[in-house]
Length: 164
Image 1: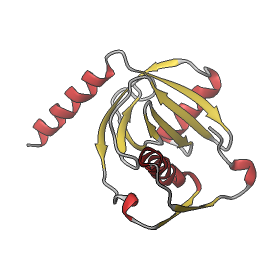
Image 2 (image 1 turned 180 degrees about the vertical axis):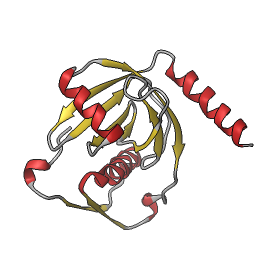
Image 3 (image 1 turned 180 degrees about the horizontal axis):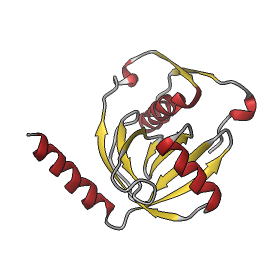
Image 4 (image 1 turned 90 degrees about the vertical axis):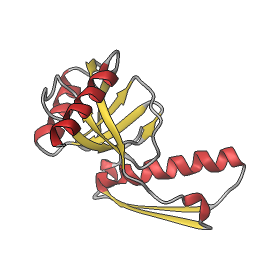
């Protein structure tokens, strides 16, 4: 069973990698913006396993998508895999890298059903709530309705804010 699961994941990653590329851009606050070229149909707040073979050939890592059309990620550089795209973005800003992804995973409630929505996030964990808030705003605009939405984001300093 395990072998079948791994084989299926490998096949999906290989299929989605055909003609797909990622652009890495360094941002303020030890973060990097990764944008893929292929659009996907995913729900806001879901996460995928991202594969960048020029960084780690045999590893995929989970990240929350900020946007799915095209897939975009904001990755905070800590160490290991998350530090490598940050260094690469500083060396080769805007270079196209071969990539793929596996997913979508995760599920969130339908926030359109609520009268008021309050999002609370801390640091780079805000990528999850940004995605949900942006998806909610798109849905409300398409339905020509409005809701009260509050967004609380705890950060260490204003100099570490990320602007995309």
